[in-house]
Length: 421
Image (tube, rainbow, N blue to C red; front, side, top):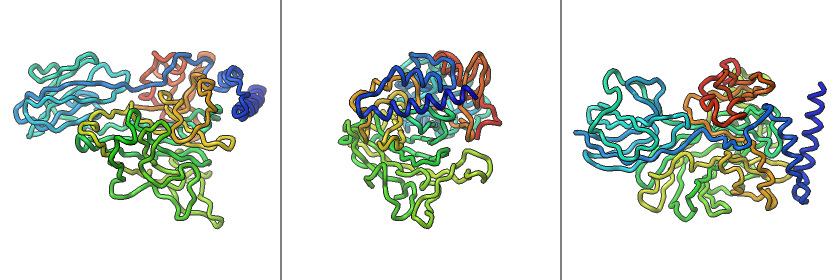
């Protein structure tokens, strides 16, 4: 009870501190102390980058008779379960292609397959420092029955309380699942699935393409002309522009995804014209204001002006972010790499580094089979030597990773199945 009261006092204090930032009264030291107290860890690695993904680049010579494509894979499809295709290019024999992909930071090998017209896979494995690759010598298992290969998807999980601490640190207030597909050297298809919403306050979302200027994009078209639905005549409050392609404040290209996550799930309104604000896909029952709905999904074809540009876009360049209302101002919540990007709004009052407290409100998780926490559960915590939360397996827990960025980097593979969706 004393700890709860202490936290309540601290949260109130932090609200006052942060609410005063427009008046240049923000006290970053005090805010950091309160964040330390409220976070679900005793300690957090002060050098943490909260990154689980890294880029690989290779140049591949397709020296296989009858080859039709080169596929980049997260594992060996002859021996490994749950292999993901992380890149693909159509080729002809002896073509040389440069390819880029994103892999989990725990990966020590990239598997490259030359696939012929009979769908036979010729597989080589390479380490992170090997750039030039061919199939003169196959250095891994190349026989047996091919296992199913899934398409790479990355989860983006958000706490919507920024800049305040989260009540649960469940990273499920908004859950996005994103995949990419190279359609041509100029066109990249980005598919966004709104997987879950665990908050009852409005959330909007957009996707910034880091390193891509607005002027480098010819067009962005939702596939089939569809979009995340919303109630007819529902006013846009956060992203007021209807255009799909937006220009960020830094000149970057931005995809306008949705202005209201709840309307994307259920677009009917009450008698006052207000959208119903339930929690979606964070509980296995339709009770207590929680409902299970089919997750809406939209694909966007991004066409660049320059030939070959679509080949260079990896997940590290994708910056999906949510927008929330905090103290009457619209704030953006980005993954940690881009935490201080003010893309559509300005809200740091010229002092973004005052919020450089080492904490993140967004996670990028490179695993198609990831299971996010059920409502009211934390992603994980590590206090007084004990582990808690949805990912609490010793040596493979979220809390240990939070305490040391070099430990338990595979935590997302070890869910407590009773606490995840």
